[in-house]
Length: 283
Image (cartoon, rainbow, N blue to C red; front, side, top):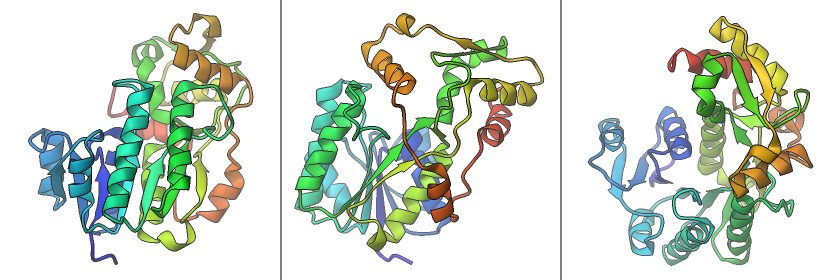
């Protein structure tokens, strides 16, 4: 049991929320940094006993204040609001604050494949942050999530019409991760850091093909869902095009049996189980 709080940055977002939920299950003191403590999600955390503090990923002073006296930090950066350079600046602000406050352990959520010279802009930005972590003085662990199951929800209307649009061959496995599994793994690393410091660990829950994903969705929804191999050339966003080109090429390289066998404390959610549990809440 830890005495000092563990800090979760961007605690009301997808990843931060999953980590906070897992830490709540472990009944440890939690400090959550959010942009606006008055928002409903932040108030709900406070009602569960979480210490909620305001801050921004781009503001070293607010980050340092949030990090003061904590035992561990879960950090996440994003390029999808202000761009790649803004994400790198977030990483530098986090590292600067962690150095200033002598944080005992920083857990950084990067992305699987960031160490593969992928050419994917939002992978490369995280690789730059990882390099600065490795050259700094803060004890750290890097987690590399694969494609999140939740990304399938982006095509909710099309799936409800019976189509799963993915720019992959129908028989190409896609390593994916449940956010809850990321949360459980990150909580374990934060609460038992000794064996994880200095490691880079990539995470995947399952690796279904698009055809298998469509079959699972068909069973869950009670309608026929077919995979539509969306043309890669039709992916207009350069970052997303590069990502799907990578996933059609070398792709993620998580040794899933070794990962799951080495970490039985995580339940490791199958895609079909995730779909069944999740779709009931979005239909």
